[in-house]
Each structure stands twice: as C-alpha cells, then as structure tokens.
Amino acid sequence: MADSRKPVIVLVRPQLGENIGKAARAMLNFGLTELRMVTPRDGWPNPDAGPAAAGADIVLEQAQVFESTADAVADCAHVYATTVRKRGVTKPVVTPEEASREIAGAEGRSAILFGPERSGLETEDVSLARAILTVPINPEFGSLNLAQAVILCAYEWSKHEQLVQPTQEELLPPAPQKELDGLIGHLEEMLRPKGYFLPEDREEATRRTLRGVLTKPAWNHLEVRTLRGVLSSLQREPKP
Image (cartoon, rainbow, N blue to C red):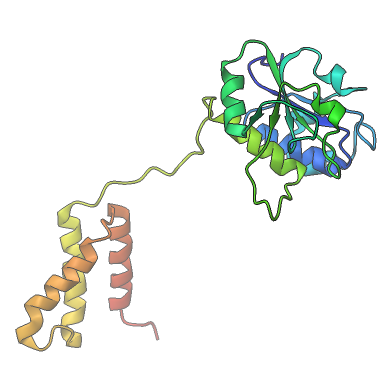
C-alpha cells in the first residue's frame, strides 16, 4: 500500500523507456516508490526501462498509466509542476527544498509533475498545479534531463525522511603509545647503521622530527602492526 505522506512522481508523456527506468532508479534511491505516467509515447511496459532502472524493479512493476494528467493527479490535494514560469500562468514558484518542506507538512496526497523530455509540460498540465517547482540553474545552460530533475526533487524530499545512511567502516582508535614507541624504535634501529642520524650533534633533533612525523597520523594498532611488518620484511636478507 502506498505511503500517502510521500509525493507521487508523475511523468507526463515520457518519451524514452530508458529515461523512465532512470527516473525510477532516482526515486528508489531516496525512498519514493509511487510512479504514475500519462500516455507514455512508446506504450507501457517498455523493455528499455528495466535495464536502466538498475534494480528499481518495484517502482516499475507498481507504475500506473493514465490517459490524462488530470486523471493522474485526481486524488492529490497538492500538485507541483516542474517547469520554468509559463506566460499567462500566475502561480507561486518554489524550489525543490521549499516544495519538499511543504509536502512534508501537508494534509492529503502530493504529486510532482515532470514533462516530456523534449518540450516539458504544456500550459494545460501546469494549470492543474498549485505551484510551479523550479530548480535554480545556470541561466546560460539549463539542460537537466528527466532523471536529474527527478533526483533533485527526491533528494530534497529524503531530508524529511529517516533514511539510513550508507554503512561506514568503523574507525579504530589510535594505537597505545607503547605500540607507537615500538614502531619508532624499530625504524630507528634500522636507520642507525645506515648513518641516518649523523652528524651526532644533530641526532636528537633528527629523532624528534622523525617522531613528530610518525605520531601525526594517529595510526591505529592494525596500521602500526602493518608498518612493523613492512620494516621486518625490509630487515630480512633477500632470498638467494
């Protein structure tokens, strides 16, 4: 059953199956699953949509097709049309961030309309919306594709959801000083016979500099053990 809090994504007269699949992929990344389409140019289902969805099959399987934009948003109280401002159409203009904030606090279903790839929404489609949703964009190059437009809106909506952050590798604490001292001592032992600490009157300063370099990264114990292993390997005589 659809979650009525989440906005419906409506693709009006989409042209390419590949773009429909990419839009579905963008939706599912940010927790949106309800896709509606108005008379897709190449019919539905479209064999090109599946591969482009890259696993967002649930969105495509549950997608609904309507004969008109009005039918597609008939149950929605809040409709946003993604377009530049249309001549002769006087409506509030909001950004994706503002729209998502309004949707999150609204009663009733919400929908976001996206027009065909070539021409965008017609004035008749925009007239059904309560607000125009426009992305601030470079005025000298306004060339977002369908999936990019969908992902911008879906991402802003996701900020109001409790989505799980991608798992991050747990960071280990810095190694105990004893282990770090062992590493430094090991390296000094290897460097001394090579004359690294000469002249003798500079030995103490050179050792302090070396210690400063090795303590700055805050190695954890696994990293210290790795470095010790490298040094031990360098100490061994090469095999004949």
